[in-house]
Each structure stands twice: as C-alpha cells, then as structure tokens.
Length: 110
Length: 114
Image (cartoon, rainbow over all chains, first blue to last red; front, side, top):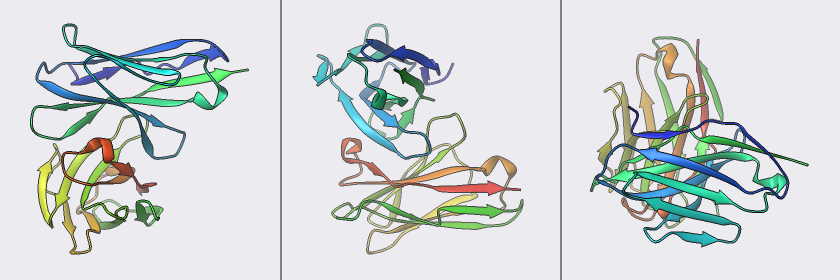
C-alpha cells in the first residue's frame, strides 16, 4: 500500500459546483499535512496547511480525520481558474521528509 | 524579489551520461530540497541541503548526489543516467529545514534520457 494515496480523477465539474477530494495516508505517525496546487507544466504551489481542527481559506476548506487517516479538501463555488492538479503532502514523525500523493486532477468547465 | 530559479530549463542526455542541474534559492532562504516528478506522479523527495550538508535523503540511489554552496545555491548530480531518470526535477527552498509551509518551488528542469 502506498504511503499517500489520491484518486487521480479527473473530476469534471461545472462552474459554481462544490467538489471534494480525499487523500489517505498509511502511517499513523504522520504529523503534518498540506495541500498543494499544480497547474499544467508548472511548479507546485502551497495552497494551504491542514490543521487538526480543520481550517478554511475563502472557498477552500481542509479537514483532517486522524481516526480514518485521511485529509480532505473542499472547494465551494468552483471557478474556471480552479482547474489544476491538487497534491496532498504528508510529513511523518520528525523526519521532515514530505511525501506527496500523485495528485487529483480537477477540470472546471463553463 | 527573485523566486527560486533553476537551470537549465530542458536537457536531453543519453543513457550512461552524467548531468548537473542547478538551483538558486529564494532570497532569505537557506535550505534547498530536490524532488523528482515523473509524468503523472507527485514529486518524490530526493534530498535536502542545509548549511552545505545533506540533512535528509529520500529513497534514491547513490547515483544521485548534491552539493550546496556558501551562497545557499545548490547542484543536483546524477551519474550513469537510466531511461527511468527522465522526469521533471524540481528544486524547492525554504527558510529552515522543517518549514515546508515556507517552501517555494522553482520552475523545474525537464530531463529526457534517450
């Protein structure tokens, strides 16, 4: 089983839709969690950190479920510009080595 | 304020050759990490340099080596290239080794091994 797993998609949604992605991790000692966004043929950029109590940044909400070992990203009122690949990142223990998922592709259409 | 820069942008090599990729960190950053991103996959951590020493290493063979200079810039060297080394190589810099939330990626070097 891979350390970090994501459904590659693509998720194809209309503008204005709400869409959610999950990312599961296998190591219960995982401590830090992040979501990155990567546009086609561009570098990844940090979207948001994921805190234990859940956190929101505008239309984006990130949640952590330690019991089931997954993190989620919810995007409300999708925009065309949200079309990208969303990568989850997990850091386990004190290693500071980030493990990336393969990413979930989102396509928002008019 | 210049972000993370990498050179070259693209590179074509043949099997068995050696390659050196270069990275200049964002101003104010002293830690450089290197990643390999194969097509359709997420970035895989290769290693991290801080204070001119390799601090962390991912699951990559010794053919992958690096260096960090006093001005914090870094090089990634890959020896005895294999077809499977074809990928986008990303450099990322951060303020300190543990602060991934301050990590910025460069645009990457696309390496093709024929």
